[in-house]
Image (cartoon, rainbow, N blue to C red; front, side):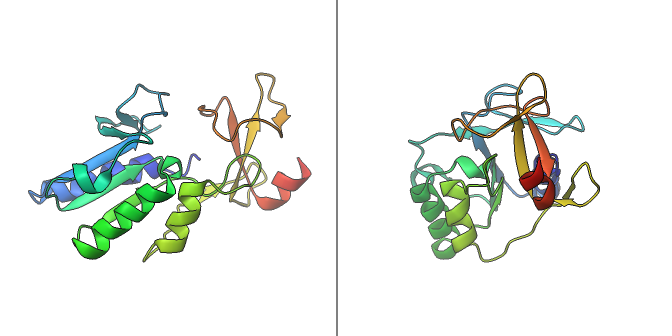
Length: 173
């Protein structure tokens, strides 16, 4: 969260397209913070993208492209991660996914766990905890800024609902 994942994805798409290559961008239909079907960087750039939900079959819907980019990849199902892995391995289409590893409780998202297991390469985008250390966790907060430790794994929100934290602050907050 707040590490620049969407900004990085938009930059990668721009780099491919600047070379005349077609890309396909996706984001989770559940992510409606800035409107469904929009990837929006907190820095300002925004772009319309295709959306995926539980019923999306990536092998059936991806045309011939130079690269597939996925935002909010933590919301992929395990079957979808396997489809994307097959797309990359069998059809040779690079697939680059951006998302969170864990939820506000420290539990892995199923899609993220499979991505970590199958990925050929993993690059971490770094963020900073309020204490100044590297943030690796997310904390959910209520409208008063108090930590929430129970609830549904998925609750869409931004800076008003979540804070990034290092491991020490995650466990001591």
